[in-house]
Amino acid sequence: MAEWAKQNGTWFLKIALILGVILFSVLGPMIFSGSFALLPISMFVAVIGIWLILRWPSLGILFLILTALFFPSPQLPGGLNVTVLLLIVLIGLWLLGMIVNKRIHLIKSRPIRPLLVLLFMVFMSFAFGQLGWFGYAQTAPLDAQIGGLLIFVLSVGAFLITAHQTNLRWLQVLTFVFIGLGSLFVLGWLIPPIGSTVGQLYQLAPVSNSMFWTWLVALTIGQALFNRKLHIGWRIVLVLILAMTMYVAYFKNSDWKSGYLPPLVAITAVISARSWRVGLVMAFFSIFPAIYLYSDAVGTDEYSYSTRVDAWLIMLEIIKVSPIIGLGPANYYFYTHFFPIRGYFIQFNSHNQYLDLAAQTGILGVICFLWFGVEMALLSLKLRLDAPEGFARAYVYGAIGGLAGTFAAGMLVDWVIPFVYNIGLWGMAGSVLAWIFLGGVLSIEQMTYQEVGEKSSADKLVLSGETI
Image (cartoon, rainbow, N blue to C red; front, side):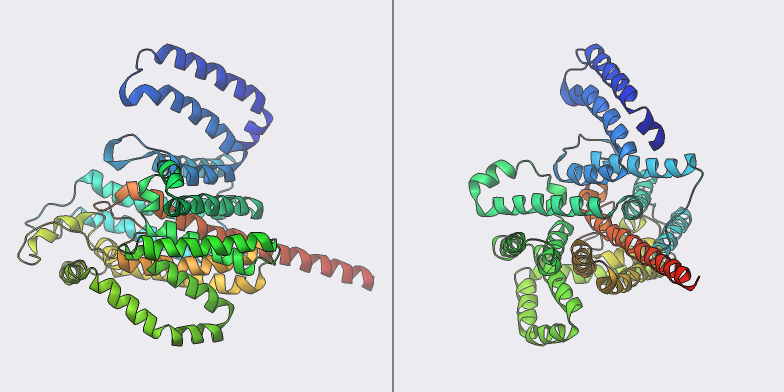
């Protein structure tokens, strides 16, 4: 399909323009009211967008980031939104391209295996979740269970399409566009006139998710400290963006602990990855600041913290019913009200990524998720030495920080795999950022070791020629 689009691009674009104009002219006056007013334009834009994505697949991932940050979504059934629909299209086109080309394969990279096993476990949990683990309780509605299943599939899909469809140049575009747009949003917190104008453009879902702040900090510090090919002036600008972001997160938005604690973990991980000795020194001197931050976080939100602990204890009781494969996507929410929390029989979610995974997919699901984290960490630590100097190596350092911050955020109910009865599909506009930028590490892995293999082969040819 991509090859056909390249060969017939001009013809295809002309036909798309003609059909778009006709469609808008005929249907526009008929439905020019309410939320349907933009439907013809949206369909026309979708046709052009698909043509562009077929020609430049990496452009689709850039569209995904821009859509997540800026594009408002109408109320759609089941919590569906424009970001999720675009992600479905991108994954579908990627799979369809492999089928059409009769070349169905995944790159060889260790982090992919635990994610595939995790998906298998999710489908197993979904199947067994139909049985109902509490005889006197109903399971979640089927559409909610499918929505929960879809969240897992789309998260892994975002990781895979980034790993397979980006090269170093496009990864630079994705990274610096995100840093630029993220810093513009943060600047709005410091300069009210900018905030009143720019702040209205950003969607709440991504900027209220810890993934936005964590990866903005992680990618920025990675490029600022380790991209030696970047002009010193731009590196200073990145340091200022980093300082500005942490200032806003801690001082301007201090009530939200997930805004500054995971980014702090990311900064520590990046610096420690550069030098374990410096990391040990930082760990020693950060003991008292860490105690203060923890005490401050708990002290300023003691009621929330204590109720979360109560919820976690109840979650452990629920998980005992099916500890191995879990209760299925979304189901545990309908079992919680049988366990009183502070005297109230109410439905609630776990407020913890790991307990959430255990309740939905069992201990095996948690193991797969942690296995993925370990594989990503090992790969990133290896690549920080092997990746080419400049952007690629700096990106890997940033990804190490982003990975650490992402897994830390899971303890603070900032989802990298959203729960359908919390932020659900709507929250994927924020969580998808982590999966995209983690997928970029695999792209750098393929580029790095492919170049090493090509150089090795060239050296062998030269030696062979000298021998002859």
